Length: 195
Image (cartoon, rainbow, N blue to C red; front, side, top):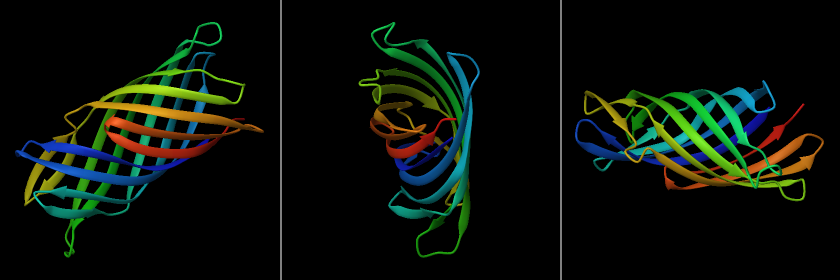
């Protein structure tokens, strides 16, 4: 079981010919289950509690919303038998919230879907510290309404690279922090408990 909080930033291109920049902050509770020594599945549920979107110099605030995800991962290589551990992942997420133009009381639904494939390289040192690097490719539509028209957008980079670090505190508890710096940008941290 895990508790993760953080924020991400993305640049979106919409089919109506305009771009937008958005940020969202969220908290997610996740669970995972180890099916085999190499294969695990999981899911998460949480909420959007803050954020902002700017399009054509108009600013919109994100209202509180809901997010949910499912995922699977397969460990292809394992250290120390191999020089590093290599884990492949696949995840699907959906977010449901709404936007409100600043200084108005008009709410517009904002729905986002995300399918993401990842490859993560890691290595554990001193039995407690595991740094990792992850490369993620993703895609999925954002459904919104702008100036009275239904529009569909996406992040044109379809890329996220991340550096992270996990520390095994003890008694089944681990702490994690991750920063994403190329493509979609993000900063997340959290705690997990294994039982």
